[in-house]
Image (cartoon, rainbow, N blue to C red; front, side, top):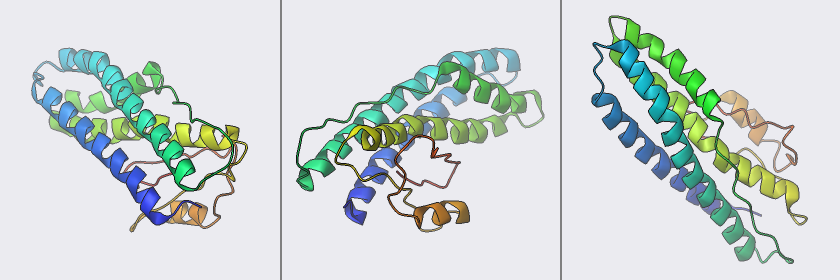
Length: 184
């Protein structure tokens, strides 16, 4: 059974990826001319899908390695290798960019950055979460996956986490939300 130390290891890897995402997006946003909202929006529409895919791929690879390492440490019999889940589709990222870019057309265009960071952080973590969920679906020795909360996690996530490792299929959608930082 996966312990808190292993969950912390995965969460730290995800946090590191989110820190890199934040750094990259903040630097890119600082380079935009907010006096030209159409140009800024278009640049974000071009940049964000690539950035989210890049960091999503890194997170998925880290999650696959984590799953395989935990499986080895637990000495699970049989062979299985976690497969990396693909990135969030570009059109999903573009939709969140368009929503957040609405701030660019207001008196406070800088408010677009926190909205972009929140939306892109959530989407960067999806491939890692799907990697773990898919591994538990396909690994014949897996019991299932569970939501793991952190201190201060929301009531909804705490409720789902109390159920334990009962989630086996993708129909039990993770449905993560910004700033909760739950893990699979």
